[in-house]
Image 1 (cartoon, one colour):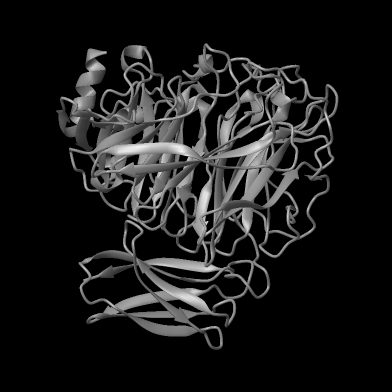
Image 2: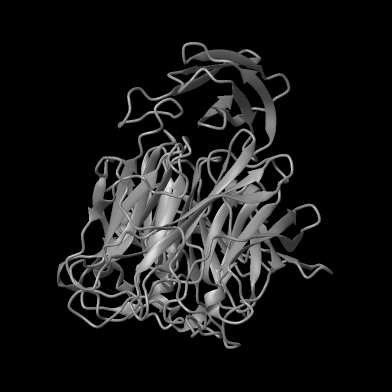
Amino acid sequence: MNKLLLTLIVLTTGMTLFAQKVIRNKDGSYFKQCSSFSISRPLSELAKEHPAVKKLGVQKEAKDADRKFPWKHPSNVPFSEDPIAQREQGTQATSSAIVNIDGQNNSVSGFDPLDPNGMVGPNHYVQAINSNYQVFNKNGTVLTASIDLMTLFPGSLDDGDPVVMYDRFADRWIITEFLCPGGNNCTNLLFAVSTTPDPTGTYYLYNFEPDASDYADYPKYSIWSDGYYETCNCDNQKVTVYDRAKMLVGDTSAGFIVIPSISDPNTSAGGGFFCPQTLYADGTLPPYGSPQYMFYFTDDNWGSGFTDMIHIYKITANWTTKTGTLAVYDSLAPQPFNSYFTGGTEKDISQPGTTKKLDALDGFFSYRIPYLRWGTYNAVVMCHPVNTGSGSTIIAGIRWYELHQDTTTAKWSIFQQGTYSPSDGVSRWNPAIAMDANGSIGLAYSVSAPTSVYPGTRFTGRTKCDTLGKMSLIETTAIAGSSAWTSDNRWGDYSHTSVDPSDGITFWHTNQYMATSSQINTRIFSFQISPCSTTGIAGINGNTATVLTAYQLGNQLNVKANNLPSDDNAEVSLYNLEGRLITVKDVRPALNAVETTLNLNGLAKDIYYIRIGNNNYQRVIKVPVH
């Protein structure tokens, strides 16, 4: 251990430990400063000097294994057919995956499940698994070796639950994992924030301890205008808001606000699994000061006292007073569904050639819930596994939703909902969903069946103008499985779908699958969905993609857009990095093009964002103001 610590000190520069400043508020929220701060050496150097060592023959179940408990209320509602189940494949042709490569695998990490996740940026794709990370370019070429997270984070023990974020509004990368000091409770959360847009460069390294007595299991993060928001599967449920503005510039006084949250409605007193999700801003940031929202669902199949319901809570954070609030906001009644499998035993999904079954990852919304702003409404998409079998036969399908929020009343409603479960006996689960700049929805997930389908990965999707509630694209296999997983019942824990910020229309997904000889691999792939014929931005599956450009000339910003989907009225908006709207102008394109100017008088030198769009499409680019 001493040798390891000496090595880690060399890998970082100037690590500073802090006596944590704590401010406790009457409403139960509290503020704490980070525990330590340092700056890493360039990741490209660390990868060359300390590549991950293959852990052949080593098999460790992730440290959150003891966090799964049987549900308090077993199902007592008779099974009924999902009234909106889509039992047929889509019929619209889709392209094969554009990039389709293997990512990292468990011979490198030694862990299962792999917790595969990653995000795409303008020039890179960064993937993290338990407990390694790696950088690729967008052609799929490896740019760094796979690296142990302990190489990046001082004091890390490769404890796991990593999450990668690309903050498109600041052009920065964030890599996180939790830390279990001394091998005990995983109470600390580690953040690496890139100092430049280059994910192979140096990182600001932060160590946070939201609750010294609580296991910070399954931390899930989102980007909002006033912070990085985190929820977790914790005993003491909380929402933690991290000071995004300070972390982006390497401010050593960066801290976080902890806001008490609701307790798990459906597990034993000794613990269980409950991780609500907050909204992850894609496209443009919400205006600074906009409240964040937290979502979870309940199911009448959980037992007496429960109903099928989507619950919405409103969250506010105030960095001036260092306080935060969480309050019931609304609830939405969806079409009936059954999210009950085996009550948290993890023995859910069948595989060929074995009686060993896999965890359905049931009872909570899958990561992430992307949030996009349109003209008169805001939209979010979310999904979770449901049991679409009958009797004792379990077949997993995917319930998905598109919610709209009226920008005038702030009221949420269910715009559309569906359950994707074609009648072929194949389970589809561990999903991740996203929406592109045309309003098309991409959905990718794991698949398995008891006789012929080993655990692999597929995807589907729909366009904005398709019949509501239907995934209209023909299902495509990204990678087929070749063997069964029999070491335990764990699977994935999560997967990840994101949209390329460069074009707004290319989906990227990462997930795990079974290669030959019971080897867990991960897959990274991208795909596009052809837009509605006259209402969306085209790409490789269309004709000519929309081109949006902007440049400064004196105190004016010249904005030009070509190949727009239509000549319908649109807005040209200018935002800063915090999501504050600087100015907006209504434009009417002619011959699918428009050119206009925005006044820059009084604007500080900085990076800003230009958006053009309406309710049918949007395109966002960043522009420097000198």
